[in-house]
Image 1 (cartoon, rainbow, N blue to C red):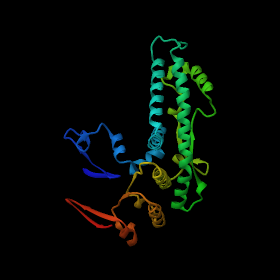
Image 2 (cartoon, one colour):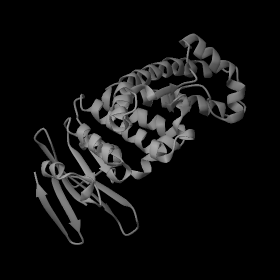
Image 3 (cartoon, one colour):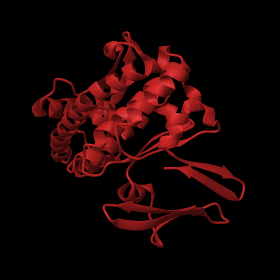
Image 4 (cartoon, one colour):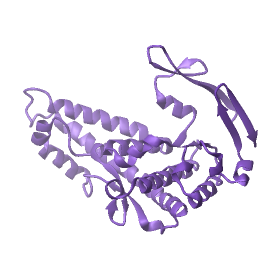
Length: 296
């Protein structure tokens, strides 16, 4: 598959293909890419895809990665801070696993001090990110469902709450024996979570799959809205989203999409859209061996 992308007058050709061995090959202007991260530099995007539901139902790791991805797009310092934190964490974990190394060894102290500094800075950035995202999420969810904006909440759950750097360092020092037993550091933002709550109950445990999908869609729309205010507005991809919604929610979604920005929606049924909505869009019908287009 090959597409031509243009941003502020800069045009590139991005391509994806699979070798006979099954290996995926990604290129931009013919040059190979190391991985999907460079795709995001060339074309930032937000996406609602069928397997995205793991963001709600999956492990905390998926939600931390989600927060970190948004943070790196919006805050220039976020990526470097996260990398430095992960390096300090890897160093302490390596010490924990070193045979014969005493727990009182002074090698632990500098890494624990750095973890306290970087960990709290990372928590502050994530919390600030979430405080900007929450109102947008609640507004999007209310627009889709007609429910009160405060029906759903996003909570940042961290095990460093209330700690300053000195207390953080002390907790790490006190936990060396326990951490050695489990072979990893238990305190810090690498263990944090993003929790969706409705009516005081966690969405991942108590909401229906339809309610979870609507919450996820509201979150993706909130992310798209917020990132549009940054230097690199993202493309929004919505895969078969209309089949998940009733008629009123489809109209509410299209209304939100009219706020601006580029949007690609896939569907197997044009009847999910009104005639007026289709007239405003560029419609591409794909059949084996051909693509037919109409509209704006």
